[in-house]
Image (tube, rainbow, N blue to C red; front, side, top):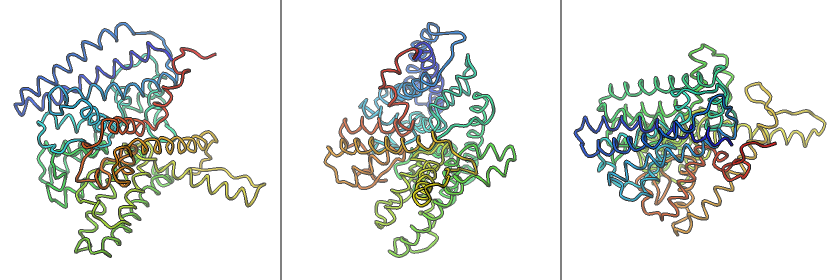
Amino acid sequence: MNKKIVLHSLAQIALLEAVLMLLPAAVALYYRETETVKVFLIVAAAMALLQVPILLLTKTKNADMNFRDGVAIAAMGWIVISFFGALPFYISGEIPSFTDALFESISGFTTTGSSILGDVEALTKGMQFWRCFTHWVGGMGVLVLTVAILPSDKKSSSLQLMRAECPGPTVEKLVPKGKSSALILYVIYTVLTLIMVLFLVIGGMPLYDSVCTTFGTAGTGGFGIKNAGLGFYNSAYIEGVVTVFMILFGVNFNIYYFIVMRRFSAIFKNSELKVYLSIIAVSIGMIIANLMAYGVYNSFSKSFRYTSFQVGSIMTSTGFATADFDQWPEFAKVVLVMLMFIGACAGSTGGGFKVSRVIILVRTAKRNLRKLLHPKSVNVVKSDDKSLNIETVHGVSCYLIIYLLIFIASLLIISLNNMDFTSSFTSVTTCFNNIGPGLSKVGPTCNFSELSNLSKYTLSLDMLLGRLECIPILMMFAPSMWIKKLY
């Protein structure tokens, strides 16, 4: 690992975050929240003063960034941005415990949406904006934003960073240059964000509320600015808009690039998109039938309204809630928990195991069964009419094993809180898959404030592991990562 390249990139990330803090400072200034303005300006100035010397001392020319450098930057970059992102919460005193402030910051940037706040409306407007804005920054990826905005000495550097950070079994460039790919992704991301803000404003939601809600939706994070969540507005139109856009932001962003380039045949062949939409449709149908059977709602329209919203929210790992689904029948809750594990598409802002991995695992199992029946046959795992190489297939299997081991270890630690099994299980499920609310004591009407500090740090680590899909964080513990060159 080239420590100069890593330190230089980390300083760039921290400096970019300092600049981004000027946005909530401007919002606080507009609402005449003088103390909040001071907090953001002080933190931003301190970060800038700390990072500029590091940038100057670590500047290198013609230095190649390899995959290990990209992994180190991804792992430590997310820790750095989460740490500094917690400072405004803590220094302002709006979240007096640093552990809680760090939990909230990590939950924001990883777009998890789990919270320790019981009264979100007690926050100032500027702090609420920062809390929601962390979702938007983390949604597409901190490193992708860095690549898109900041200059790079090497063309290869941008792709290494995107490979280390972007979710999914594989990362493909949209265009030959990684930096151009990052720019395209953020242009699409920004355009969708602006369109959603427009739709919400048309529906009567105030501009400030619309922007904050869109941040939570675009990043599939779920932080809100009202204690009652989106239920505060009691608007079928607003819930409908959010439902549609949650599902749209859970789609692989390559699809939108194909739409712009009019490559419609690639869209129709995309098996992940078909399976993703099919799972959503089937889940909505099953839960509606279950709710109607138990008479939870007195009409089909209400059942469809709340079910489609909640399925879209959970499947995409957004975590918004307009109904207390913890009170739904057991079958409906089981379906939602299953969706927590499946998650959204690779290359989206959503979390979870990813639909593409589920497809590969199912097709691998099907191939192995065929091999048992016909030992001499040649069977390959395909995706969109393309044969997957053995490394990709093995990578998915390896990730599943790591995923399960981390989940079990986390569950054992959380069980020390002596909560009921549903609370312990879903708290790990929702944080590791970057969902937000769980069930029982961590359900949509509750929060994570009652957990011990050990549990909060464990779940914070789970959120980072889930967002970066384990490998970058785990690789930091390998001794070979810290050696400059391997021969």
